[in-house]
Length: 226
Ligand SMILES: [Zn+2]
Image (cartoon, rainbow, N blue to C red; front, top):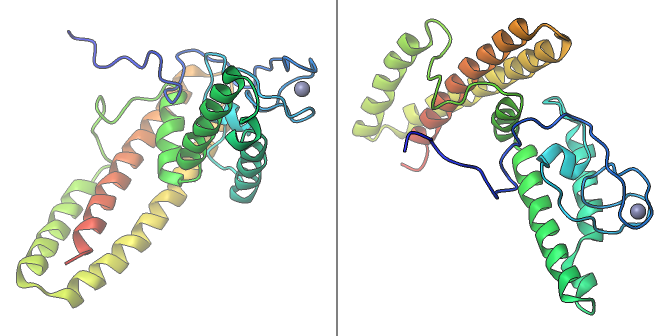
């Protein structure tokens, strides 16, 4: 079996070739759906049609630079209409649909509300390389990290909590900087209309940056809980 892993049947996995912003119509009122599952007009729950991604589920633009408040508002509003308690007196089918949709909305919100998870998800959705395929990091990053990792290991072995705390602080600041760079790289990607080569280059840069972010996240966890 050379095929790495199949996403078939998993609504959480990004669809292979879904076009962003494809509108379907509400099964009840026939108006265009903004969220792929909950009608904004009549609040009818619509079956989860494949392919559906997290952005489409919540009915928010497929962008890294999302408004966090708007995302939360959107999630709460849709979840309210899909709450399984509303459907306890309904048919079994509607109860199952409400539960499925509620849990999908939860998954979508959990992923999209975390900037790192959102970046990883979007990178895959846009057709960028996965971290399993491309393990590279920005130039000079690993050399710099090797020194830091040695210092961290020493501090851990010595039980030097103060040093660990100091490293933790520095690393968290670094993480924030690096995520700001991720936001810039996604903005770059979004401004490149049309040219596939340049778009792929952008996705490659995002991949390298995310690999570095993920490395720093591991180091941050080394500074905690000792
Ligand atoms: Zn409707």
